[in-house]
Amino acid sequence: MEITVNNAVIELVQGDITKEETEAIVNAANSGLKGGGGVDGAIHRAAGPSIMEECRAIGYCPTGQAVVTGGGNLKAGHVIHTVGPVYSGGNRGEADLLKSAYLESLKKVTQNGLKSVSFPAISAGIYGYPLTEAAYIALKTIINYVKNHEGIELVRFVLFSQNIYDVFSDELKKIR
Image 1: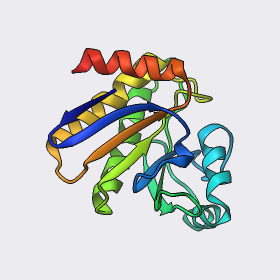
Image 2: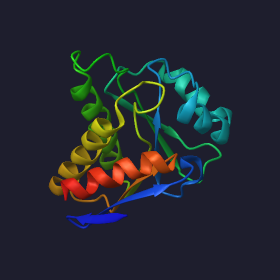
Image 3: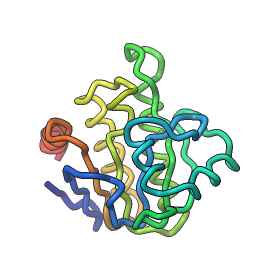
Image 4: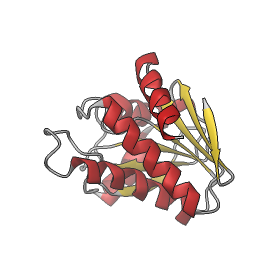
């Protein structure tokens, strides 16, 4: 499923983000940038040791922020590591932090002159964010960003399972 907003295609696919050929992929990282489980572990395994070396040199990324490394062995030349919030009931600023994780990642795309980026469903796995709310925040944030910023031509959500894809697809239909 896809829509076009201000010359940017926003696309939903089910798949493996480590195989993406967009100029950058986004990693749902932890604040210590130490690799881990889920998307983070898969990206580090596929990229090889060079991005871990870059992450060690950077050292830390606060929740809601983003940092950039090279892509190592990935087809994508850049990895944007962002830290989404751990969901704790929704009363601890989680929505603002999740929005910020997407927004700061998009700013890194723009700052680096990139035209295409692939995102996972940030915080919707082991961080426990309710999937429908996470999808709404992700899609709304990206749509609003590309409405007001030129340069990005493709934002792809690479969603791990059919269920996640279906929820994102339902939310995109409601938003547009």
